[in-house]
Length: 197
Ligand SMILES: NC(=O)c1ccc[n+]([C@@H]2O[C@H](COP(=O)([O-])OP(=O)(O)OC[C@H]3O[C@@H](n4cnc5c(N)ncnc54)[C@H](OP(=O)(O)O)[C@@H]3O)[C@@H](O)[C@H]2O)c1
Ligand SMILES: *[C@@H]1O[C@H](CO)[C@@H](O)[C@H](O)[C@H]1NC(C)=O
Ligand SMILES: *[C@@H]1O[C@H](CO)[C@@H](O)[C@H](O)[C@H]1NC(C)=O
Ligand SMILES: *[C@@H]1O[C@H](CO)[C@@H](O)[C@H](O)[C@H]1NC(C)=O
Ligand SMILES: *[C@@H]1O[C@H](CO)[C@@H](O)[C@H](O)[C@H]1NC(C)=O
Image 1 (spheres, rainbow, N blue to C red):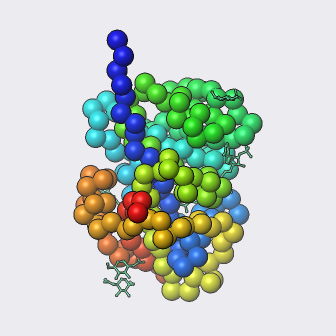
Image 2 (image 1 turned 60 degrees about the horizontal axis):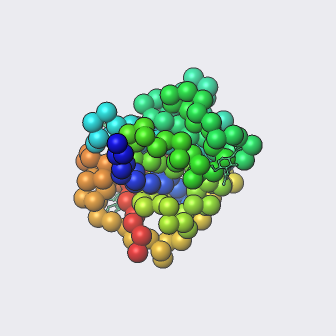
């Protein structure tokens, strides 16, 4: 018997500081936004399929930036990419692969609902132009003085190729209401959903 599995939706999830779309500094996030972390956890964990699970895909450097006690990210299959990894299932929650495509092959048959590409810069920028990605979930951040925020990693966002959807579409996709214009310290931000033009 063959069961054809539905191809999971693939979304980039990124928090970026406007106007330059900065995302990282010295291997870490440039900021600590408590509610944004909660949002990320909710969005990437929540599934609509019964007995389903979501997968997160990240580069080796982003994996290493997560403190040991917090990784793998719980309740999600963690696919870690490195050019020196064999395509290998480490355990129920960690997969090593040498490309996104090979990582995706290794989750076939695991009842995966949604797939999220969670960074970092090298991974985002290599896939944002590819047909593989269906959605962008961008947390658009503003700062009272963005030039004072140190950053060395940036999202190359081809804005003309994507369309921002109304908040209602984001809420439908993630299955929960979202706040607007959230403020934490000198930062203000909004959660957004973009689809291809
Ligand atoms: N703001 C956000 O939402 C956000 C989210 C995530 C991360 N970040 C930040 O982004 C920064 C890290 O980004 P990064 O660009 O330095 O590193 P990264 O994208 O996390 O990881 C890069 C590594 O991934 C592997 N890799 C990249 N492309 C690959 C491919 N096509 N196939 C197989 N493996 C591949 C390589 O590992 P090997 O060298 O082992 O081959 C490469 O060195 C940190 O500052 C982090 O905090 C920000
Ligand atoms: C995350 O989910 C919890 C539990 O469903 C909810 O109370 C909270 O408001 C959500 N937070 C965000 C930022 O999405
Ligand atoms: C991973 O899988 C792909 C395709 O199945 C293969 O071409 C590649 O050589 C594999 N990589 C390793 C290190 O085994
Ligand atoms: C959004 O938040 C910023 C900073 O707190 C504030 O200046 C602005 O008036 C707010 N805008 C709306 C529409 O609430
Ligand atoms: C967030 O959205 C509000 C209202 O839609 C807007 O006034 C504000 O400028 C936005 N803030 C950011 C950081 O995008």
